[in-house]
Every structure is written in structure tokens, then in C-alpha cells.
Length: 294
Image 1 (spheres, helix red, strand yellow):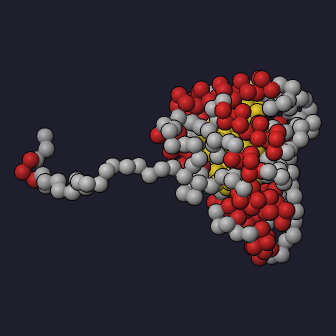
Image 2: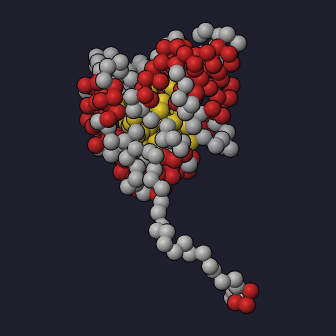
Image 3: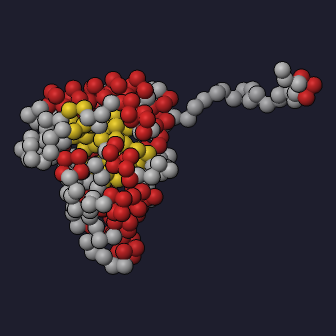
């Protein structure tokens, strides 16, 4: 029982100041449950943006260049990333459990590069995402692909499971060789993914009308890095995407395949969070890398 004699009378009840909770800087998240908003807040910083480092390529490509040894090549980049996107196998074996990064788990898979890639299935149970303390799960969605309906069903299954435990879903637009990466297609794909419940969409950048893609999507759009580009081109793409409404980038090969990946992720971060112009970021890369151009 409390010692009533030593209890100090409360005085400051803030009378006249209505209780309020600050609005979230994350697009479309204000009406989500607390746990989901809290997890999204790990991925996106106070400016509503994120630098996500993608190294989940091995789930269908195997040990691609730059990912031969994730522990040696990628884990050292983590201090400059807001979020890490990888498979549960990599998370459990090489990512330090003490890492403060938000963890985004690849949750779909199946075929390798030797098969038809669009024929994926849900590859993990949401309960395992909870055990790993994931901030989100990611699923590939093949709008216009041969197995479009199955991939959409994969996503909606994960959305339902995620809602039950407060874990957001990142819907990843998968663009096959036969599909054009233009605003019309990307706008269609991102909108479908968001309409069916994903809390975040990852998609590619297009040179024309990308702002229409981001404006038409009611949840955050994160730009996918795609294939390795020259340094200035990659930084220009990141700058243009954020300038036209993207909530950050999820880059892999454009970072870990550089001669100096640590310098590159810092340059990308300067664009996303520091609002550096592309040439300024490229100069930063050159300075940090000792003049590397690749």
C-alpha cells in the first residue's frame, strides 16, 4: 500500500492545453494502429524519408557480386542505413542482433533465376517476422506478369497477417523484361498495391511524370535502385525521385558494388536526408573514397 503521508500533491495538469499526438510525417499512416506506426517510424526518419539498404538478391540470384560475403561487404554499411532489407536467413546468420537498424524481411520467394521469376509464393510465416522483430515484410508483386493474381494474393495474405500483429507490408513492383517502366505502368502497379493494403510501395524511377506516380499512391513510395549506374547517374536518380515525391530509396547494387560502398551510402544519405544536389553528393563520394570514380 502506498505511503499516503509522503505522497506529493500533483499540481500541473496542463489545464487549457488539449491532449494531442503529433501527426505522423509518414504518408497515409495517421489512422494505422500504434504498433504499425511505431514500426514505420523505425524505417522512416523524422523527415518522413528513409535510406534502405537492399541485399536480399541472394534469394533468387545466389552469391551475386558484392554479396559473396555479406558479413564482410554489407554489414559494415549498416551505420549509414535507416533500414536493412534482407532475407530471414541472412538476418539470423550475419546481421548483428544489436543492430539498431529497422529490419525489412523478404517474405516472398520460390523460383531462382533459372526459372520463371513471377511464380513466387509467401515464403515465411508472419510469426517469424515477429520473432525477428521485423519493422516490415516485403513481397514481390508482378502486375502484368504471368502469375499476377498469385503474386497479388501473396501480398494480400501478408497484409492480413501483418494487420493481426502490427507489421507493415512493403509491396515491391516487379518489372519484367516485357513491361515498360513508364509512369502509366508504375502508376497502375503502385496504386493497385496500395489499394489492396500495402503500407509502403517500392518501385522504380521513370524519367517522365514520376511525380504522377508518387502523387497517385496514398502510401509512401520508395525508389528501387535497380542495376548499377555511374555514380553521378545513380545519385541524380535518387535526387530526382525524392524531389518528385518519393519517401526515400532502397538501393543495393548501386551501393555495395562500388569500389567504396561506405562512401557511396554516405553520398546517398546526403541526398535523401541532407537534400544535397547530385553533383554535391558525387563530390562527397569522391572525397570520401579518395577519388574513386566507380
